[in-house]
Image (cartoon, rainbow, N blue to C red; front, top):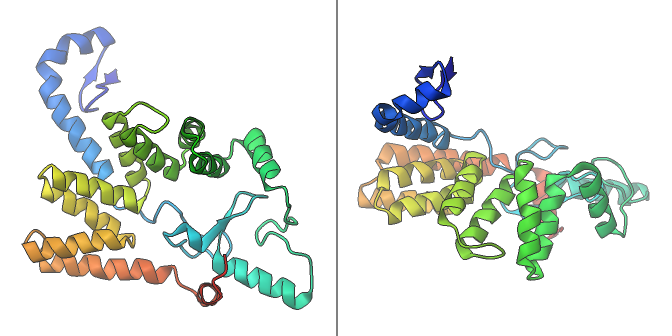
Length: 271
């Protein structure tokens, strides 16, 4: 027996049987498929798309300027751990090495990127190369690198692809593909993608869905989504209890990214 491709709730003995039953089942199937999609779309992610620093195991901040991608191992390390490593090396007067894999830093970063792409198809490196190409104005090349990174599961690449499809940069404008990549990014824990979905639902007049998106993003620490919920509370679309719960969760998410080492790095403006 084979489950229906859309709703998964009815089983068929063959493809022919499914095709024959399609006219009677189509409406119910589409409604159930939409429900299943929403169950996935509106599930609260356990953490943001960045995940945790592999050294201190604290959640990485949302702003990428607060952590760095190691060219040698492809790990994203928070500035607090980078600061602690530099402090130790300075104190002991030893060679500067990667705080994660302990490999000596190389001056040839581009060569390291190329090796990682060729050897491992590393999504983080593909994403960063795509970013470089985009900043250079080579949108078609950026699209190629980000597409490959997205195929390998990189959430940031899905978000950037959504923006490219929307603006028509390096690819033909395609709102359907833009929404697809935006939803994949949101499901993967990308707070800004979630915020954008909420704004889109607001423009379409579906405020209940907009509030759901903003609540999820706010609980991941997204400031703009919290402000959107604040607006919703003032306008009567968000209850006092729901806004208070989102506010507490937002503060908890922000506090979870803090540490003494990260605060020291921030004070020194360590990049």
